[in-house]
Amino acid sequence: MWGAKLNPVVYTVDFHPGKVTCFTVTIILSKRPTAFREVVEGHRSGFIPRAIIPIDDVGNVEPSGYAPGEKELRCKLASLYRLVDHLGWSQAIFNHITVRVGKEDQHFLLNPFGLLYHEITASSLIKVDVQGNMIDRGSTYFGVNIPGFVLHSAVHSARPDAKCVIHIHHAACIAVASMKCGFLPVSQEAVLVGNVSYHDFYGVLVDKAEREIIVKNLGNNNIMFLRNHGLVVAGRTVEEAFTRAYHTVLACEAQITMMSAGLENLVIVSEEAKQRSMEVVRRAQEMIEDGALKEKEGQVDTKKAMQVRWNLGDLEFEAYMRMMDSAGYRTGYPYRLPSVKRPTEN
Image 1 (cartoon, rainbow, N blue to C red):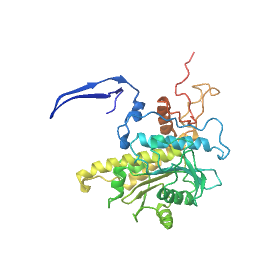
Image 2: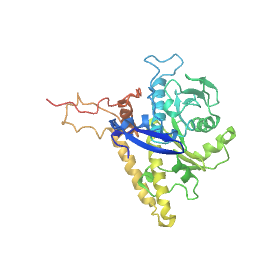
Image 3: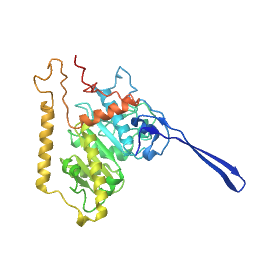
Image 4: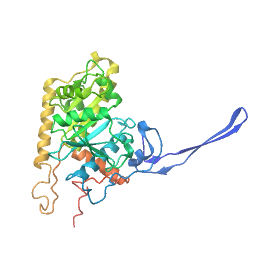
């Protein structure tokens, strides 16, 4: 378990012909915040110390080629790439997360194929349309990965509500996607993410004709398991897509752990319990959107009270952005609640 201390280890070895005569290990303790973890622990990229690259590298003035609000979306998407890497979901330079830009143009942003996730910044993101035309090359020399374009363009073109699409090759998700039993309702997380779809493996996704099958199989669901391949998650916002992916990964990890006991030993959540749970989630979301979680009238001065509207995933994502900004990532995130501390009462 990663704690509050960073323990770099210095190895000293004295060599003599034919043997090692001395092996000394020196441990140097230095305090670092937990959020410092990603700087030192590279997850799938290896345990290589690295400097923090600021996410918001666009500046205060949006470039002329940006759509209204594009800079904010670029910062959110680049931050999500960093967060995915921090959680250990990344696979070197592969896989993609995309965000639709603009209301009328079918343009979306994605990562340049060649950067590790910890290198992605707001300006480096590439903008393309669903036909494959390059709209903005971003700030790097890299281009677009074709399989990534095929998958994400299919979802964005068919589902206007899918503003953000996440595709990952997390080991537990691949394992579940490759099981005949599929994604089982054996945990609370599995129940709360809702219905899922499946798409069979036809080979590496390079054939644009496969987009029609992808769209048909996804349907109206927001989660699709790509058989023998990985996971696709869609959301109306970056925040919603992230929290949906987060709980799906947890559910897959739980299922893989449970499977060691044998499928016959697993307790499957009943359909009634599933529906009741989904109703609780729906009511809770309505309460948040209607402001039921605000201070009760009369307890505070409503003229001074900050009124915040939280949508699905906002609370979790904003908490992670605070963690990253406190570590120096400069996310450029537009906080709904800039300060989490209540003002001191006189």
